[in-house]
Length: 179
Image (tube, rainbow, N blue to C red):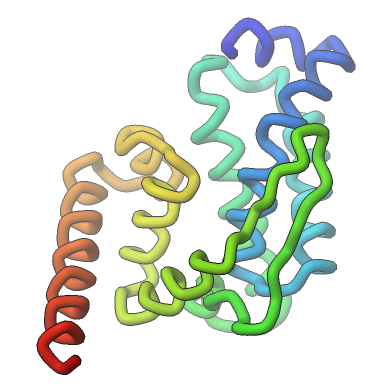
C-alpha cells in the first residue's frame, strides 16, 4: 500500500486505485455523521480533492490512512461550523428509514440494516466514545491511527474505547434483565 500511495501523487492510475479503496470507507465515515446523501457526496468530493492536492506533502506513506481520516474529520468540523451547529451534532445517527448503497467497482454495500440498530444503540455514548468505536470497529483503524486522527494519546483512545464498550455492555445487560 505504501508504494501505491507514493505513486499516487504523480500517477493517475495509482491515485484511482487509492480512491477506489478509500472512497467507501470515507463515504461511510462522513455519512454516519451528516445523515444526508448529497452533503456526504459533496464533502467526500472535497476530501479527495484535498488529498490529491496535498498528497505530495505527506512525508510517510504509512500514515496515509490516519491522514485521510484527519482530513475527513476536519471537513466535518468545517461543515458544522459553517452550518452554525455545535461540533457535537457531527455524530448524528442514521435515520430509521434510509439505507445507502454505493456503486463502486466492488459494489460495496456501505450500510446494512443491522448497522442502524447498532448506531442507534451507540447514542447512549459520548460523542468521543461513538467516534472511537466507529473508527475502531467500523472503519477498522488501529489504536495508533485513531490517536493520530483525534490528536489524542493511545492511552486516551484505549480509555475511551474501554469505557464506551463497558457502558454498552452494561446497557445491554440491563435490557436483558428487563425482558
